[in-house]
Image (cartoon, rainbow, N blue to C red; front, side):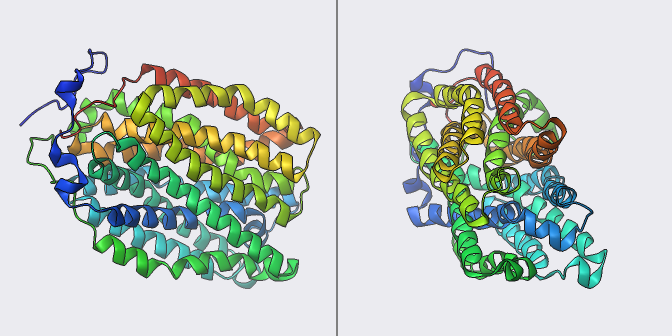
Length: 445
């Protein structure tokens, strides 16, 4: 059994003729039609919809479950519990990722659907603090922990499946659908949120209306389960030798996983500042809720379109340039963009700033989410990516909304979120420079 499926990161990359993917990597060879890829994307979108909807209704959830002496304290408690959902992501990444590398991508993705359903159902049906007291926030925290396990284990198997199912020369475009599906989730969450806010009175919205988006997502769970049950398996799609899943193999690739965490850092902070724009617009800039929800819709559209564009470009020009240049542009443009929004707080400016953050982040992310699994052998592809993603998102995504909310209050600087994005983007750019180009690698290891 081979002990190293990839050359060292500082080694000279193999030539194209040595690394051309074999026919067994193609969907035609493994029997993966486009509808199966769509099933992967639909399930992933459903899980992210459930998770990020919490962020969009953080103000209302805070009032329902975390009463406090001031609105700011209630909001801080609410976004802190949003962060709790990230605590168990590394656990989900390790357990479900290793399960996917041993049992297969398909059973792992069915498991994550089941877990996210439990968490969402509990959150939607939990009575408020006024009705059952301290039991309410405790149940909400538990539901967020379950959702965190599900999402921690979802990204690795789903992305590994897309990379392994892709035809030669289109791996980045296929895996870009993973991030694009998050854009779909954000867009749908924003549209539903706007409909709920426009239809209900403020009292109805606070009392029970914020629960509707969670309940609506549960109607799609049977469809997502059915689609994933029909998926083929790509883990054993080839007969080549591969490294065993396990901690020893993960340890041998720790440099790649460590760099991946830093690559994910910048995209995570940008993404969750983008998710935070609706709350930021309401709580800091005093936008009306319906107007503020426009940021969510814009983020969803931009993430969907530019993630696929990033994947398309990465297939043609390589992973590194498409990862790096949008990240550097983010570091350069985000502070002026926020200062413009603060100086001219209007819906067009809010949408423009959200577009800049989301589009650049999605382009870079579409390439990054491909490069990381390409640098890992098949036997630890799902677990390695799951761990890197879960750790990066847990350490920085889970704390982003709390940190920027606190920074705005502590410093009095409404542009604090932008400085946080700029600094973390520079750290990520350095990690991207240290990664090798992976477009022409043979991933059949």
